[in-house]
Length: 343
Image 1 (cartoon, rainbow, N blue to C red):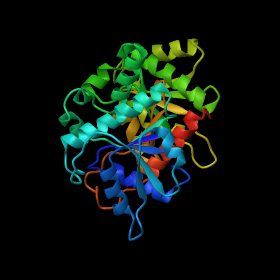
Image 2: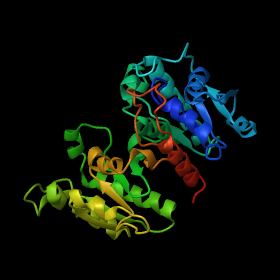
Image 3: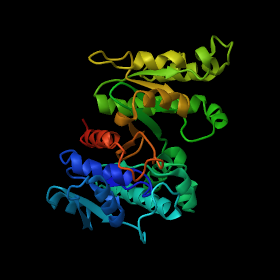
Image 4: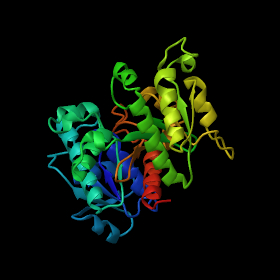
């Protein structure tokens, strides 16, 4: 499995180094697509007085399987002259981060790797990188474009959705990285139904059974019968009805301020639903992230490849301090391994 470097000025290299250092069993068979010097800096940072992990250059993914323990394999990409300053926006770091994602996506599409796990990139650095990378607001859109091009399809023919998941809650989003006004306009019959179909298909493969899907309303109290908005009556409910007619186990629309609590699993008690479809980015991500960033995993649904990511950003404010927690990255690696094994 490939792990992309993320933004070299952020915490991505640091959490990668911690994962390989502290969890060798979890990272077995993984390699990093990125930059040797940046990873060597990261291994020194996290070594805490111990001998740093060896960082070995590989030329092909298969070489990662033959390296000895306590070794971090890196497939060198790009040409950074030196690692960028921690916590500083850098066009070079944005370019390398994007190149790593493109390389890993194409390798996965060819079948050279089983999955990719993406360390966080910085959207402003991506914008500074220039075309073609600046045309994508994030990982999801970049991966969608690569998958569509590989399949000879348009973006509309390769719909994808973002799912944020942890041990307690799964949330799938109708829209992702767009302005709130645009996100409201994106709540259409087609988009909601498409989200339900992608969620059903993906979770059916993950769970091995028909998933129970709840749908959050857009408006307070799910519109209160049209008093606070008609999107639930005119758009969301008809999409749910159509999904049910196609055999999906879908309920709602429910009031957004309570549906996530109903879906949350606690200890040995499962939630009322296997996933919640949320209407826009923050509506769905706030409850998942409130439960804890350390175990959250971002999964892209609808792609002909397996892609997961930690549920946090580049954390420029703590980059280089050694404080970053690798738990979410390790959770993403475990999830990618599970999905690529089809279990």
